[in-house]
Length: 404
Image 1 (cartoon, rainbow, N blue to C red):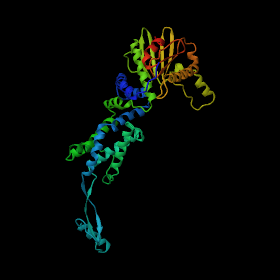
Image 2 (spheres, rainbow, N blue to C red):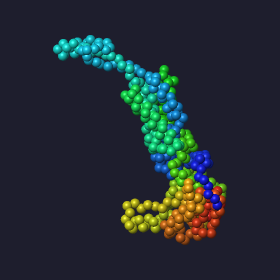
Image 3 (cartoon, rainbow, N blue to C red):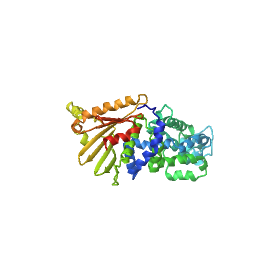
Image 4 (cartoon, rainbow, N blue to C red):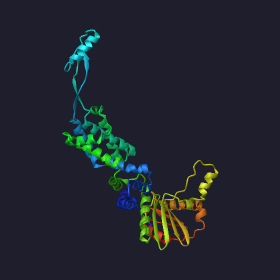
C-alpha cells in the first residue's frame, strides 16, 4: 500500500461529469434534482439551492456587469424633477404666480415668491435596473455565506464581487434610487430603450437572477453542479462522494442492475437486482432495520438525553437473497496530512464501534460486516476478518469479496 497526496482538483475533474449523470437518472423535475443533490453532497435542501446562487455570483454575466459599472456611473441616465421653493430673497426657476398671490393673501401680503426650479434626478427606470442588479449581487452573495472567505478560490471571488457591488450602491447618485427588482415590463423597456447599449449588462444580470434564483431553472442547476457544486468546503465530504460513486459503479460492474421502476428517493442512492437477490445502498443514513435495538441509542434513552443521536456510517449496504439479509457498513476516511495507514486505522475504529452499537443485528451475521475505504492506493483487501480494508483503486475487489 502507499499514501497519496490529496489532489482536490483531480477529484473534482473525475467527479464533475459522473455526479451529473447520476443525478439525472433520478431527476424529473427541480425538486427531485435538489433532493438527490442534497443526499449526495451531504447538504440540506436549502443549502443545495445555494448552488444556483453561487453560479449566479460567480457567472461571467456578473463579472462583465461589474467591469462596466464604472462607465455606467459616469454616464447615468437622468431626468428633471420640479421642486417647489418659497423664498423672499431669491428666485430660482419660473414663478408660480397663482400660488404666489394666494400665499401673499393668506399671509398678509408678505413679499414671498413661489417658484418651481428644476433639478437633475437619477430615479429613472435605467438606474432602478442598475441599482437592483447591484443589490441582487449583494443579497444573493451574502446568502451563500461564501462572502466571508479569506483563502484564494471561489469564496474570495464571491467576497470581492459582493464588496464591489455594495460599494457602488453607496454612490450618491444611487442613494435615492429604488433597489427592489423592477417589474418585467420595466426591465424590457430598458432593454429596448435608447440607453439600452449602456445598461445591457445590468439587464442581463436581472434576467440571470430570474433564471437561476426565481425560476431555479434546471439547466442552471446543472451548470452549478458541474462547475461549482462540488466545491464543497470539506475535502472529507468530497472523498465520501467519490467513494459513493465508486461503490455504485462497482456494483453495476458486478452485474447488479438498477430496476427501471420510478425514482429512488434519498437517502437511498442505489437499488439493484441480480439472480433473484436485491442490494440497497444508503448514504449517511442508518435504516431502521439496522438501528432498532441500537445499544448507543438505548444508553442515551436510559440516561434521559433530550435527543438520542444515532451512529451514522458513511454508507450502509444491505443484500437480501434466499438465505436472508446481510449488512455491510462502509466507512470512508482520509486526511490531507495523515497517510493511508492512519486513515485505515481510523476507519477500523469507527467500524468496531458500529459492531458494538448494532450488535443485536450484526452479531449473528457470518463473514465481514465492515468495509473501510482509506485515501491512498494499492491496499490489497482481505476477507479473513470482520473488517475489510481497501483504497479507491481496490474498492471493486473489496466489494466482490464481501458482497459477491
